[in-house]
Image (cartoon, rainbow, N blue to C red; front, side, top):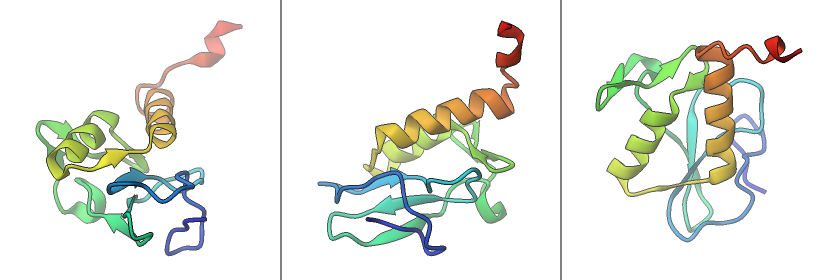
Length: 108
């Protein structure tokens, strides 16, 4: 099982064929991770993380602890990496709930 440097399991469970972006199986994300075909794991220097860059191709990188899914997609294309789709769905969901303030409570 792949883990972050904090010892938290990553959402991606298998060794990928090409470098693949993923997240920790955790409530807050402070960085993204890349799992390489050799099984190594590195955090991804992502726009907005550690105040390196604020944007990627016109998209803000992070809002608090939530990566912008559009920026993640653009970053993956720029680097030629895959994105773990379960991770991406989690990123999109968290973005809509926490950043876009999608009020799912109004359904009741």
